[in-house]
Length: 285
Image (cartoon, rainbow, N blue to C red; front, side, top):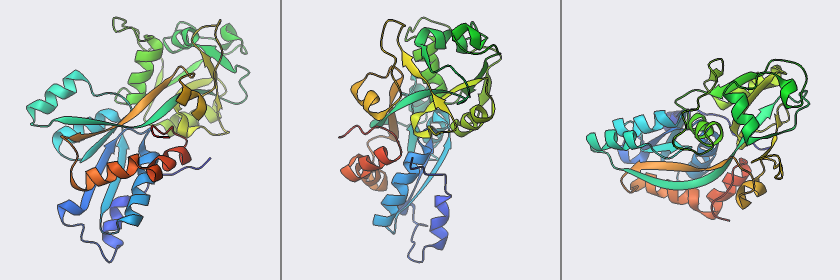
């Protein structure tokens, strides 16, 4: 699986002999969703090869961090794995910011366990009961006798919000279901991957671009009468996989300048090939 890892792209400004990035219109900052960091950096690297006098820095921190940065004017593009919330829109308006949404790719959320865990499939209801703390032992879902260790992204993460709303609350806007008090809130998808790799009782979730042989993704079904489906590009594209979502860029008003050129590149055939190469799902085939 092809992976891209965080780079301090901003230092390209210092080492490129042709750089004129001290001018504001030569440089943009992108912040937000950790799920999207590898994808956005892959896009940025290729874009800067084509546009050598333009510079793009990409950092994570979570979707909420991206929106905060956009509202405060410290980034040009916010990455998000969820839609912007009403309260964020209201705060943006107070600051004179008009969030503009661009759907940029699709993602499936993989639910993962340690490869030594015999459990290979779960229903949405079982997941909801596990992550809310109602099911606490693996033997209750066909596994070995052992306590379930729940791993989640922290509350600022769009992945955390999406999983809570679509799995724990099953899409019911009136539900108040929450993660179990004992759930371990981790700062990144990579941290969840690392913990699952070394803990045979752990269960977590991340964007399927992080899937590796060191964790086992589970097949998921809406209920036990329906087909259990693996988190694959094909299954997300066709809508068969039940835990999938769009990924977004947000700008202050319609994008202009480098931000516009960069987004157009991301949506181009070349940009959408990078989506596939980083194990996300293109919105344009």
